[in-house]
Image (tube, rainbow, N blue to C red):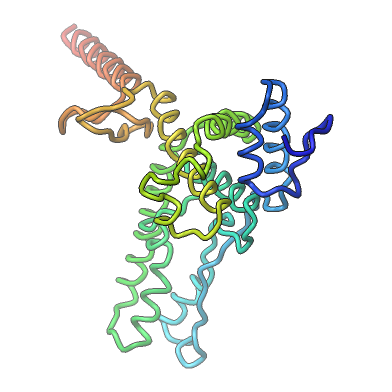
Amino acid sequence: MRGMIPIYQCEDLYLYEIVEDFKWAESEEDRSDIFSAFCASIWSCANKRRIWTRTIRYRVNRAAADSELGRIFAGWTRVEYPACKSTTKEENWRPILRQKINNLYTRYFDPEIILDKAYLDLLKTPKRLYYEWTAGAEMDPADVETQIRRAMEEAGTVKEALQRGKMALPWNDYKRLIETFLYRCLQNCKLADQYEGKACVLCRVDFLTEDHFYVKYMSRCLDGELRKWQKQYYGVPKSSRKGYKRCAVCGAMIEKGGNRKTLCGACRANNDLLRYRRYNEKRTTNRKAEF
């Protein structure tokens, strides 16, 4: 092993060196020390998960500001929504892996960050209509107000539906889950020299270093492991020829079962209970009416 010392240090090591040390570790204790240092290096990385407010903005020109349409558009020159950093310019393996981990939390767990294209397009409706108007399109003020109002209402509906489709997991619990995935990555990955003579995998990928090769491998593994965990979270089969969709009420993942299957088991039971209660209330009301 490289410079065996009481506490394994990996801040100055390349990722491929850490993978090799993990693979060549002489004991489970050594392997555990390497993995702990590997995880600590990722979590202490400066590329933290940061949330800020992003703004869709435009400026109504002075010539149009006094018109009825100008005043309508002036009320929508700033449409704000929460966003999260999704890319990094760093080339070191730590910020790149950390960015992947941050993005997965945003995609699967954070209910406040909605980056769906259809949702964002709805929020951009006032800006889009304004530039169409300034480009010469004829518009009726009442119709513009209606379009904007409906777009914002639909954006709220879309956001709520997408929020229901996200899983609930606090950040600290997510970190522990990711560590179990990372350990599997290190256990299952092959050393780069094991690929020699086997279709030369390293020559086919669009990366120039072994570190980039392992980063790409681990990123794919994290994607796959989280998709499998999601199915476990919702209690659906790990594989299904029918495919999956979302419950129309709570957003839970369910196995497809034809066009008539739109609810998960819990929502279907609750829906049946409500129908039964309404039936009993109606029957009781009819009986009272007879007397």
